[in-house]
Image 1 (cartoon, rainbow over the protein chains, first blue to last red):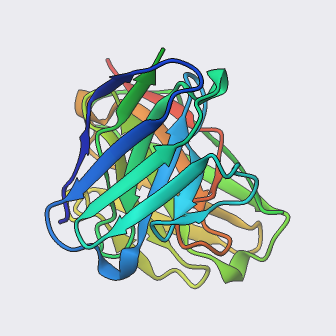
Image 2: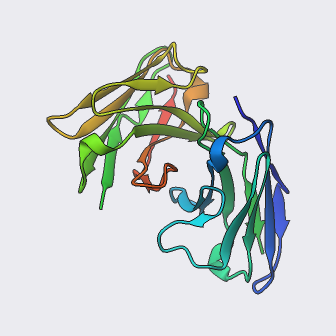
Amino acid sequence: EIVLTQSPGTLSLSPGERATLSCRASRRVTGTYLAWYQQKPGQTPRLLIFGASSRATGIPDRFSGSGSGTDFTLTISRLEPGDFAVYYCQQYGSSPYTFGQGTKLEI
Amino acid sequence: QVQLQQWGAGLVRPSETLSVTCAVSGGSFSDHYWTWIRQSPGKGLEWIGDITHSGATNYNPSLTSRVTMSVDTSKNQFSLKLSSVTAADTAVYYCATSVGSWAFDIWGQGTMVTVSS
């Protein structure tokens, strides 16, 4: 199975700053089938990005995804208070589909 | 818009079978893969497997010996059973699907299942 490793484990930033989250795969992700999710405490994960760089419905353009092959990045251009959460990457190109361990974005 | 509503027993004894069901509303039951995912503090998010409306399944090899998924097309529901549970199976169990992105853009509300005697 493809192992996804996210870094950093915790990212401490302030509102208005730019956040860069990394996701590295143990082998090439098929077809850039890489997604990013946001999860706040007590809530279900919310899809932000699919296909490595396409924003899901209703996701503001402050969120952008990039990458291919084994290296992917989620960028949040100007952090807002509601962005502080845990972010997960996930590959859905090769079964079993797998998730990264998460990056906690904190103030 | 597809919506998922799930339910199941919140407490299961070790060695018994965990069961969770998910009801689909607002969309075509035959158009999607119906997925189960779990989230535990120790292992994070884990894809359990998926099933189509016709009953074709794809399970995570790490769980395949204990997992059974099924569908009830007459009720637009799909279900998960996990047998011989241990404390390691304690988690929030989610049903989920994709409505076009192939990623999981629709989730149920989650069912917390605790394995304990």
